[in-house]
Length: 232
Image (cartoon, rainbow, N blue to C red):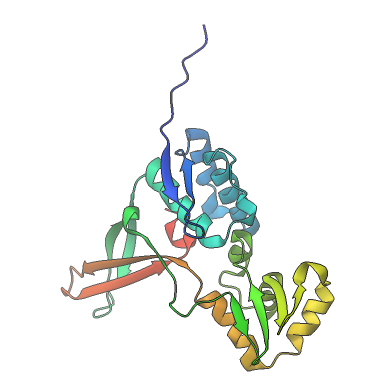
């Protein structure tokens, strides 16, 4: 006689990028075993594992490889909350006495922050501008902590949707990599920095933690972001 198959609960959340409601389930034991390998995984492996786990737990109804990075981070955090614990333990360094102490926060309180002046259309001159898209999760993981300026340049190039000048519009899909590269190389430093601002002001998954240092009673406000902080 076959063993019984237990029913797995499902939950809903709203994608930050579109406001679309999606259904997901927690990690199963076999998936949790895979999750434990993230601490030792390479950047490429981390991106693949996270995307694959989200794909399975959202019933393969999302094109995870095309989702912006903050959607992936947001989904992953709630998967962790429902599968392991909504409480994440962290170590805080006191701003007053420099001592480290244990603290924690609830994933239920994470927020998605977006700068007020944020736009995906960047004007380089009065008439010429670039339309950009949010980078994918694997691209962000690759560039995390990277000091290689070529990685930043490559990320900007891959994020171009199109270039416009008045009523003229050049779709990036119709241009070669060399043509896009040449265009970016003709920009001034100030113009390229405008493009970088798009990435630094893009939506972020953020948690603000209020805690009191047990050593000197200093009230500390800690702000963490980025999925690397949550692989606990």
